[in-house]
Length: 281
Ligand SMILES: NC(=O)c1ccc[n+]([C@@H]2O[C@H](COP(=O)([O-])OP(=O)(O)OC[C@H]3O[C@@H](n4cnc5c(N)ncnc54)[C@H](O)[C@@H]3O)[C@@H](O)[C@H]2O)c1
Image 1 (cartoon, rainbow, N blue to C red):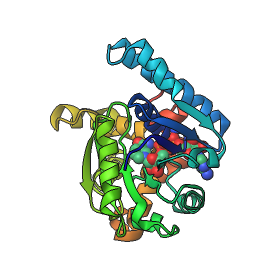
Image 2 (cartoon, helix red, strand yellow; image 1 turned 30 degrees about the vertical axis):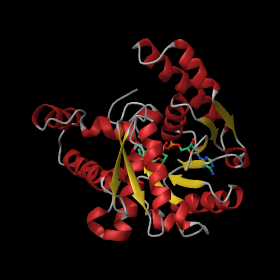
Image 3 (cartoon, rainbow, N blue to C red; image 1 turned 45 degrees about the horizontal axis):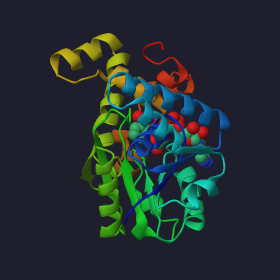
Image 4 (cartoon, protein in one colour; image 1 turned 60 degrees about the vertical axis):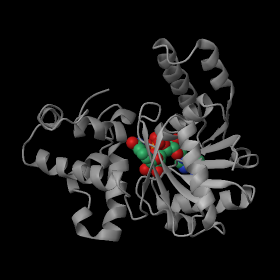
């Protein structure tokens, strides 16, 4: 299916990145959020990110302005749905919220439209279950930060049609990224691995290890490009905790979020988005 217009729901860290790379690839984008403040922050962060790429010679000033001109910002869900060929949902990682949004998307979007979700852990089949178009629902799981990360997990639900999967794969390729297929069980591949690592970090810290030392072990001894404490600050402790909760529900207690992870979330130590996590921003 030929895509022209993309709707992105949720203008947080991920939604703003998805809007940015889609607009830079030439799509018309409508970025929707219930919060006007979130939309304002998204506009500023997209301009800053494109400006940084322009500074590195990855795009010209004219291309940057053209990309910015292709993004509309709105608080009205209908505006992101009416013309959209593809919608990518990127709201909080919460099943009830995603069900509410997908029920609405199913009613508001054209019947041909493909509905994607950027969920990092929730089963695509479960998200699709509230719609009457399971064949058109797919997981398109971008990594953070979206403009820089090359790989995108693509997850078919139980009912996803071949044509929907082909559309999602072609979309990801047009963004200059590599689609990687993963099977539809909670956490897919990326979060199954990384959320468990984050939870293990909590145990190491409770045992007395320092975040800086854990990060150095991973970068200098294990060859990771970024240590898990810094990565958790980037992803958000709340995102990791909700991921573990989803996996615990499907796979059992081995995936339960560590109490220290919960405590840090309750204290607002979410990482970059609250200015404080393991490090200060
Ligand atoms: N943060 C990461 O590293 C990461 C990586 C991959 C995938 N994800 C997934 O992407 C999704 C979004 O994560 P994020 O980190 O961008 O979250 P975030 O907290 O930065 O942003 C979520 C946004 O959703 C908006 N929102 C909430 N309810 C809404 C509604 N009813 N309608 C429209 N907008 C609404 C909020 O106002 C907020 O701006 C989650 O499903 C998450 O699991 C996150």
